Length: 328
Image (cartoon, rainbow, N blue to C red; front, side):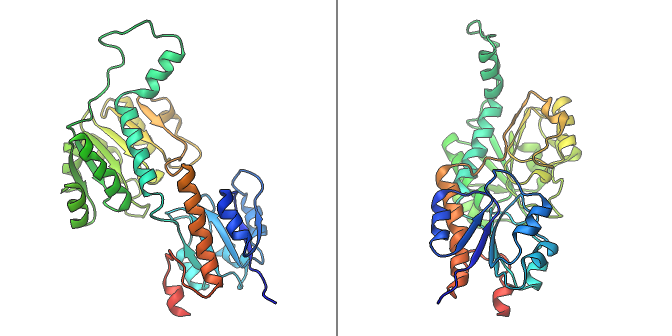
C-alpha cells in the first residue's frame, strides 16, 4: 500500500492548488488568514514530508530540524526565497523551490500601475473627490507629470525588469538600465541602454527597482541616491522592501528632492515607516504585485507540482538549491 505524503501548507492558497495537492497527499492547511507565530510554525511542521511556505515564513535551521529528517522539500510560494536559509536546507538535504515566471507580467503591470498613479496623483485626486472638495474643473487642479516620451530608468534587468521595460515602447520612452553587467537580451527586447547607477539616477524621470534582496542590494536606494535624482523624478519599488531606505525616502519626499514614490513593498512589513505614511506624494500598496486570480493560482500549482515531482521520483520544476539534487 502506497503511503501518501504528509504536507503542511502555512496559509490558505487558491482552491485549484489545494485540490491538486489533496488528490495525492494528506494535507493540512492553516485555517486562519494570518502568518503563523514562530512557536506555531515549529509545531506544525513536525513530522511533515513536505511544507508549502510563504515569503512571510522564516525558514531557518531550527524550523528544518523541527520538520525532521524525513522532510524532503519546502516549496516556497513566492519568486523570492530570502526568507529561507538555503545553506542550512542544502546541508540537511531539503529541496527548496520557488514560483518564478508566472508572476512576471502581473508584477510588471502593477509597477506600471504605481508609476501612472503616482505621476498623475490618482490617489490624491480620488480622495479629493470623495471628500467633497471637487467644485469643478480648474487649470491648476492636481497637476501631475507626463509619462509619454520621458526617460525610464530600470535597476535590475531580470524577468520582471525586462517585462516592465518592454511595455515602455507603448509610451515612446527612452529606457536606461543598470545591473551587475550589461544584458544583451534585455537590450534586444527593450532597446534599453546600459549605464552606471549614478548616471541612471541623474537622467531618469522614473526609476523602477527590480532586484533581489541581497547584502549588496540592501538600502540600494538611500540618501546619496535620492540626492542624485531629479526633483521631478518618481521612484517605483515592487521588488523587496529593504532595497529602499524608507527613512531616507521619506526625507527626500518631504524635502522635495524627488517628486514622489510608488511602493508595493516595505522594509518591515506589514509595518510602514510613519514618516512615509505622512507623505501625500506617495502611492502605497500592501504587497499585491502578484495578486491576480490567475497568477496566484499558477503560483500555487507550481509549488504543488514541485512537491508531487519530488515524491514521484522526478526533479522539481524550480529548485533553487540544486546542489541537493546532485548529492542524491
